[in-house]
Amino acid sequence: RCNMPLSECNCPEAREMKGYIDALLETGMTKEDIYYKIAKKYSLVVVLDNQLKSQLEKRFVQEAGSERPQIALETTSFNFGDVSKSQGKVKTIFRLRNKGNADLAITNLRASCVCTTASLTVDKQKSPYFDNNGSPKDWRMGLKPNQTGELEVILDLEHKSVNAGDLIREVDIVSNDPLYPE
Image 1 (cartoon, helix red, strand yellow):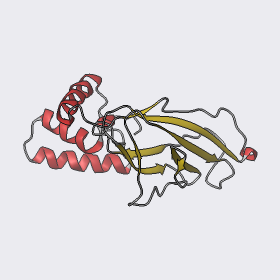
Image 2 (cartoon, one colour):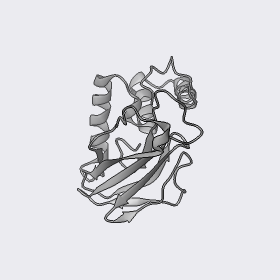
Image 3 (cartoon, one colour):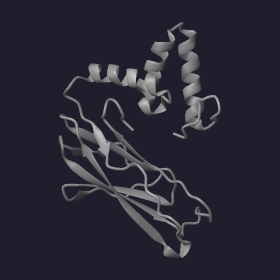
Image 4 (cartoon, one colour):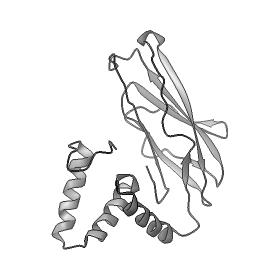
């Protein structure tokens, strides 16, 4: 998530990944197989080496075949600029599309902080707003091939967790895209 080398990061996800890598190393797997397993379990996003990522992506595409969903976001970040807590809630919309040729299932929306909520709208069907707890386990929304949706993200600047200074908040979108599920 943070684009730091795994050896320098100590977040819970990094600790989990390190434990998984250690377990794979004990099995005597090759380096290539370990990278493959890690990318398969945690997504290609965790691979920082672009050449290796490209090789793994080609392998994943070949395995997934041509009939697969593919999530695409027009943009993956937004900067609200300088804003004041007194502005209350500020929001932005991210457009996402299924550019694959199989149905895309969105199975979770999860914000990185209680001050942030997100809702997905597809064909006038709007999901509830989800915060850092994410959506319920049985929740899902689908996009047909080439169908688009809108992800509304709201940041509540008046929330007690928001302090003055630079803020970075994320919303995770979990899907059935076999290459980039999150």
